[in-house]
Image 1 (cartoon, rainbow, N blue to C red):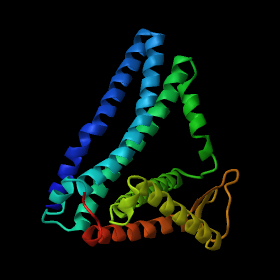
Image 2 (image 1 turned 120 degrees about the vertical axis):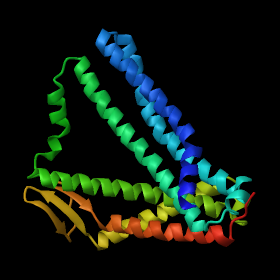
Image 3 (image 1 turned 90 degrees about the vertical axis):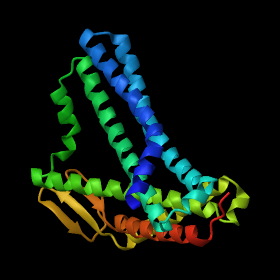
Image 4 (image 1 turned 180 degrees about the vertical axis):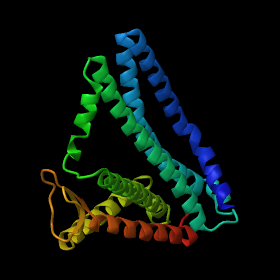
Length: 270
């Protein structure tokens, strides 16, 4: 049943975000045609459309996560969702997995598009693409080996994954709490109020913990190492804070648990 939940979630959300990717694909096709036939005005227009589509993909995905969660659980559809033979935790997990998938895809597409536009623009004005690529990789000069670079990218991937999950956890908690009997009196603004309240509180706690427990990974010419001192990024030295990352993981779990508990007994379905 859990697999069916995920499948239905993907189906119900795919058409919304899919339109953005169709627009992006058309723009890429136009850019390729303009480059081959050297039609500058089509190239410029397609580049703008592609950049807008990349940014819109992130925004549309963000709002889709909010609207889909609210609509499928706390509107008229909620009566059907909560009668399914699954727990609230399974409902929450299915929506989290699908939302995470779409948000991750949107970020990857947006990054790829903007890097592609940069390289495409360099090629159009006659710059050496290889030279442009070397500029993008210049910050890696101080990293000693390919193995270390791979570790850095793996850590960055984990960091991005945690940030996306943390954002979803905050959104779902804010939406769920805003649908309790007391918070519904504030209307739709309760979602915004709760979200920013949670965001501010968790940010303050994260800053305090980072200041008092300065745990980080440092990357320099010697490789990667664990540091327990306050470290700032300097030339040929890159540091990644671990304290805030660990806190985000713990906070995400706490928010998901709190959301599941609210879903079980406190929400007021419209």
